[in-house]
Every structure is written in C-alpha cells, then in structure tokens.
Length: 299
Image (tube, rainbow, N blue to C red; front, side):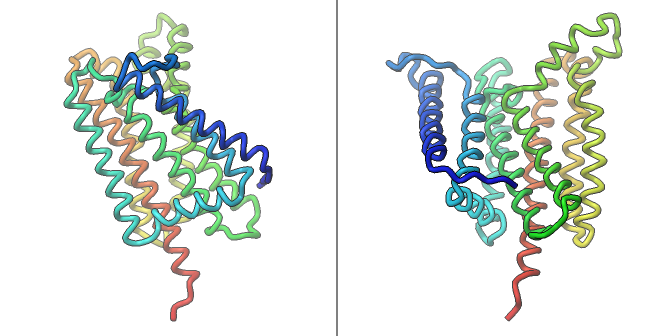
C-alpha cells in the first residue's frame, strides 16, 4: 500500500479537521441549543461534515505514520484487550438501546435528530462511526491474519470486506441510495411490481446478494476454526439480511398501515443494522485476539 509522508499535508489535514469540528459545533449550537447564536448559519445537518471529518482522519493517517499508528493502536486496544473490550462493546450496546428508546419516545414527525430514519439524526452518526471502526478493525485484523509476505490473492478478500463496510457507512451517512430512489421513480412508471419496493433496492439488491454470498464464503474459510467467531459472524450477517427484507416490506406493506407500524419497522430495521455491525466488530476483533494469543509464546 502506498503511504505518503508529508508534514505539509499533515498540517493541512489537521487544520481542516479543526475547521470541520468547529463547523459541526456551530451547526449543533444553532439547531439544538441557541438558534440565534451570533455566528453565520452554515446548515442544519451534521452528517455531511461528520463524513468529511472521517475522510480527513483517514487522509491524515495516510500522510502521518505516527498519527496512523497511534489511532490504529487505540482501536486495536479497545477491541482486543480485556476488560477494555467489554466496556467498549457494552457502551456500543447501551448507545443503541438509548437511540431506540428515544426513537420510540419522540413523536414520529418530531425531533429529526432522534429519527433513526433520517440521515441527519444521531442514529446515523453513530451507525457511520461504528461502521468506520468496523472497517478499520477488518484492516487491522487482515494484516495480522495474512502476514507480511502474503500474495494479493489472500489480501484482496480482506480489502473487499473492509470496502463493503466503509461504503455502507458512507451510504448511511450521506444517503447515496436516495439518489437511486429518484432515478428509479422515473423508470417503469406503469409497473406495479417495480414500484412495490423502494426503487433503490433494484439497484442495490443484486449487489447485496453477491456480497452475502461472498461474505458467507469468506467467513466459512477464515473462521471455521472457531464456531463462536463464525457463529457471531453469521448472526450478524443474518441481521443485515433482515434489514434488506424489512426494507422490501416497508413501502407497500407496512407504511400504508399506520405511522405506528412504520415506526416499529424502522426501529427493528435500524436496530438490526446497528447490532449487526457491533457483532461484526466483536467477531473480527475476537479473531484478531485469537491470532495475537497464538503468536505470543506461552511462558
């Protein structure tokens, strides 16, 4: 992998990160605390600057090996070391429970920041951050798993897995799939079948099937040595398949019934997605932990 060391670029990315964080703070103050805050209004959505923040972190890690190593070591530590990993995963689960409680507590058309179905909501920010961590855990685990001199045939599957997680996080945060709803809405206008489900599923669905098959084969190949790890992975994968099924049912089956049914479906769907991501992190980090223990000589 090509790594560029540059103090100038590092400084630029560091400044951009600072500016982005200030922008997020201003947006938060304007929309949540003080609407008349005497600073120019720069928007009311946190998701786009948050994604920009994550991208800047990656870019800074690309040009600053010390920063990269420090952050990767932190992720590795909180996901593999006992009892820190227990605290970390407990916090993730508590946040998910809190988000679900606030989703059902708020009116359906109430506070959009607690709306699990809105890109600008806290749930989206959490899910994006969790998927970002998941992608990084996969890359960290991959390097330990395949070793220094592995051929690309062994490296590529790991990179593909990480890419899927990163892309889903990106899509969740900025709503790429929403564009396919707009495109699909103009196609096959007379087809009841085509518009029975959300149109983006016709574009993402075939890719999702390929990804599920690829993931299943990957998990069977890499984690067959540990029924616990493999079981965790397949439970997580099943939850994500459930997300797609619920998405397919929402438009014409659940949504027309009532807001209450829609709220329940969204709560379950988003809960499945967040919990699935957590289980994926648990599975990959457990595999990483196993590899570390295997490579450490026993005294």
